[in-house]
Amino acid sequence: MATQANANPIAVIRQNLEVMAPEFKAALPAHVNEEKFRRVAMTAIQNNPDLQNADRRSLFGAIVRLAQDGLLPDGREAALVMFGSKAQAMPMIAGVLKKIRQSGEVAKISAQVVYENDHFLVKFGFDEDVEHNPPALDKPRGKPIGAYATAVLKDGSQLLEVMSYEEIEKVRAVSRSGKNGPWNAWWGEMARKTVMRRLSKRLPMSTDLEDEIFRRDETMNARIDGQPILAVVEHEPKNRLDALEQVIDGDAEYEEIDHREGRDDADMGEAFNEEPEARRPAIDSLIAEIDDADGKALTDIRARFLKLKPDLPDDIVADVEQRVADRGRALERGEGE
Image 1: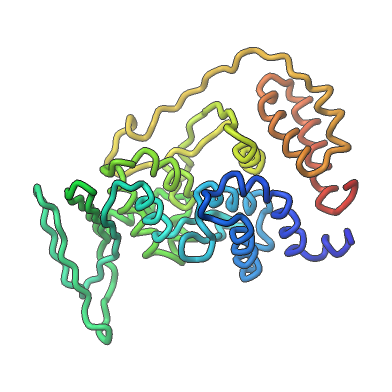
Image 2: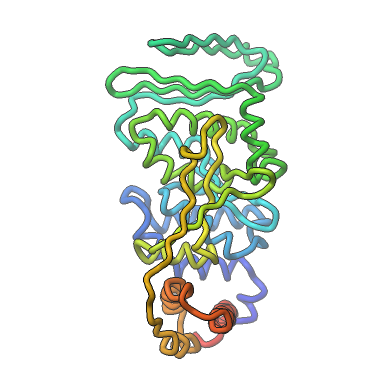
């Protein structure tokens, strides 16, 4: 049986997702069925051989993120996409608009790409508005020249954000996936999300939206001078799923902070590094539990280890990481269960 699981990545992935089912159920909103979420995720993986061969840590991390956002990886609300050898969670524009509508503060909202043969007229001022008419369906629309996002709030006020093709490409230039991946395969989706992200700063729920969708969207993460923008932070898992995500991410000490064109450093958030209070880690008992741990217990051990890690010597950190990795591989092969 272990040989079959080892030879069939789909079977191994399905088994891992079944183990994670309680975590998905805890994270998903009430209207999203946990079994349906897992089924849709498995369908996406089965239909894409690249995902089957993707780095497992990145694949499960991407699925966890979509569970927390309440988005199905069905190609409409969200998708699992490849960036190099790693999988990424990519909320689609339909998923982004869904989250905004769920806030209850927006009556209407839309984001569209504008093409060179479209009729496009913008009105700024106190009554922001846009007139956008594409040509007949049998006529070519030409090349994209920009994108816009517009919203009508419950109080009747209208908001509009317009970005030219050049402005969108500047955002793409600092994106970690700008040269390949989603920006190449999904330019329209990425352009619409980019302009919607800018509009979201003016929406009543913008802070929550930033945390729930845009900041967690790996495809929107940025680089400056070829390097990710990082802030050193202390992460305390809010629940088991947050702990699981930190384990999947591998290093919970760094969080990527997005770069937003035309905004100063204060708007990007401050980098900080607070020293944790001195602790006396019970590392011996933790090590003793590793060899007999099942999948769930190993997840708990990893979460506890992440809390203790800052206070441990390098040699102990390396030893524990190796033991945990060995146990994880053994469980994946079906040994010691």
